[in-house]
Image (tube, rainbow, N blue to C red):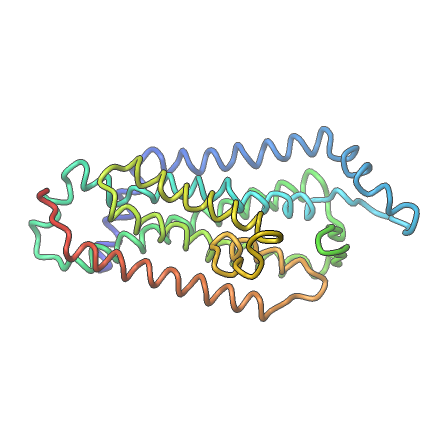
Length: 278
């Protein structure tokens, strides 16, 4: 199993889209830095101007922590897309190119092959999130400095600077779990689609529809949001509430783990009965 995982990781390293995905993430983060550096102060002065009438605001509101918090919002759509373009064809590309037939000439259990695909996807997500966290926080602190975090969702949330490192650590750890679920979902879809592009598009369509339904959940689908995968993606925001809702985070963690396990089981069953000669 370890040898299979090592083999899959080597194949990922030699694929152009692996580094293209990381490169696009770097470009995306740099564009956010550029936008906030050039117009961020004026934009936030306008947004928070009402606070000046009721509060005495001191210090640097637009600091590195707020910048990193804004970058984390790319976890809604942008980062799942970049993950999917790498992991969405881990199996379908081999089926399309016929290389899976060569692999099956060796005495390897099909379940282990399926598991190695999923584990390789998770390994990729781990290194992707590490790069994402480093490029999101360190340059942000250098460019914008430190300070307390002031964000406005579900009221005004004010978090002291001393608490922020651990909260960001929790948020990025949860992001790893959420994006690993995306990767596992995309790999599972690739076991059903014989074309790489179809596999990627199906996964992206699933995420987009889930996002749309979550947007409408407040008015049309109230009570159903718990069943939407994107609802659980957004739970990283709970780490930036003044009082963290650990119960909600635990529920989403269990949901994402359970969803991932179901996907893995489905892909194993699919591969066991798949006729690769068709």
